[in-house]
Amino acid sequence: MIRKLALSGSIFMVMSIMAALFMVAEADARAGGSRSSGSRGSRSYSRPASPSTAPSPYQAAPQQARPVSPSPFQQPQPAGGGFLRSMAGGVVGGMLGGMLFRSMGFGGGGMGGGIGGGGIGIFDILLLAGIAYLIYRFVKAKRHAADQDGDSSYSSQSAPYDITPQPVLMSTRDDLERGLSNIRQMDAGFDEDRFTDQVMDIFFKIQSAWMSRDLSPVASLLSDDMRRTFQEDIDRLLREKKVNRLENIAVRSVEISEAWQEQGQDYITSLIYANLLDYTTDDATGQVVSGSKSDPVKFEEFWTFTRSIGSGTWKLSGIDQK
Image (cartoon, rainbow, N blue to C red):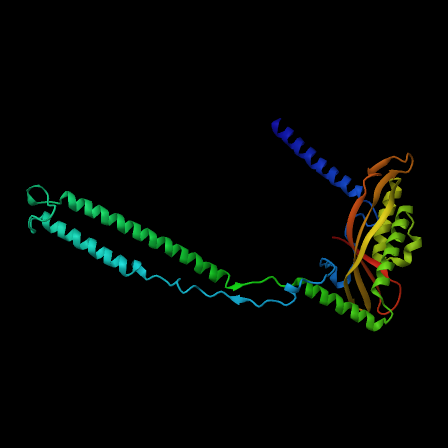
């Protein structure tokens, strides 16, 4: 009985989590469904690069890795604890031998001898204890120093170079500039500002067509993959008799992040930062079934556009979430 209750509880928990995830997915139901889809050519399986910004002057020139030289004081210690430890051992050994000989009667009534002139006296015991304590402190100090030297040696071996962070933005910026330069070579009239304005227009047109559940006005602006993806989502809304409403759309910025050419196609990826009211209503009642009519949704998405090299209409070929 207990096992059945535990199993039922687990099933209920899994179903609750799935329902919550489904509600979250439904809440942001704008064109693309707040998920990644479509194609970016050979870059489809890599994350889009964020737009490059001018690097700090302190990061403009890459720093060379510098070998970390070991400290001249971190010399390996000889086995056995070194000369001082050997000397201390010899002194103690000599004293123990002397005490032993006196206890056996070979020595005269030495200093601190025991009662009757034989055995180890109280002074000998105290002296031996003091020397033993000094040796203990000496050995402990040497062991601690050796441990620190070992840690330093390990650090030098595991990280032999002092690595200065490299200016990653420079490589991204170089790749972007090279891609844009290649596009301009085949299209002398290409202008970045005009392109970002065009991206903003396409964004509004696609969102409008999505809300009206009719892609025909923007068919020429979509690649085959994106049109198929959008149409599948629209067909689902139609079957469920729902409409996704997008209001108060405000595009904050559009920035080109990547540009390249491959297989006879130009590709440009732009980062779109926008906010809007995104909610879904029931066709029959008009009641809100997901999302909010009052709380705007902010989002950043990478939209990739493609066309034949040098000419043709830019078409949306992929959407990636930031």
